[in-house]
Image (cartoon, rainbow, N blue to C red):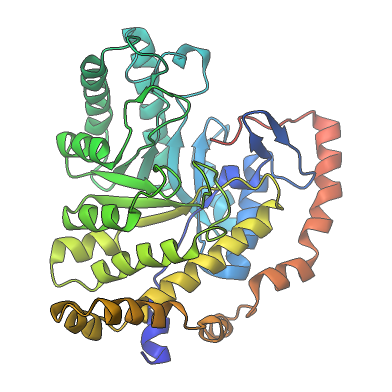
Length: 399
């Protein structure tokens, strides 16, 4: 593929920065403080602006409510714009309040369910005020012991609760429904896999689509197969990119299994080029976001690393010779099929991406350029002093 064709494809590839990925994070055992980490929304926009400044592919910032707060949401879009970004998906939090110990939208107590529903409606209003077009949903709802809950009754309560939320959606807004097969619900989780999420979306309506988190699967799960099925059904809505070694480790994208990431992008790129309008439109409208935990890495640098990684693997997937691959498939030449994929995967696309960045007025090496900028060194004493004078502390923990 010539550079012009590749660059045209790259121009449309965007990934959202998660606001919480710029804050202090850790594990269930504790939070690890980084003195430069963003604590409030204006700092998160400033840091996200740095990611966009050096990568050119992260123009939107996903917010998590109420980890992100604002006195007046109508002014938040201007605040984001001042930092070179805009507001992305809005993520409701219904998994930390003590009332949600035994569930939120699936809870047996109608008052608790209504509280959770009201929070979803609040997030829709925030999305309207900030120009967001997506509500991203993840639930800790489930049970820890056999006999604790009736699976079917909880399923019905979830459907009824989200039907109320769905009816409040504007026409241009989507519900992106995530799933996770365990944690913190260790016996059963109400949205445990892509199938349960797909069933729910089908019941809610066309504005509800499945969100795939690459860390939310059992060992050995073929994620690219799931992606292909959801594309074919027109129900793939988005991605949370991260990586894992054991379970939901939330490691930096591509740190453990970059070939899996490449194979996932192969399905997404094939969808973008499909002759079927539903598949093609679904792939082209898929929302991408990072959802990783920088507990051992500097916040901004870890997201820049991830942005470079996903752009490289997206570019490699574009380079797959699909005509040759189809012919090899038709001929049942299994060896050649694999070799065609490996040829693309083993291609060093870094020179092309460096050229793409130079054409955009960006430094060809985003991480090196950010480190040389001195941004972290500059904001650290300012933020440390600000904390001491205001007493502001981190709200929430990594989800």
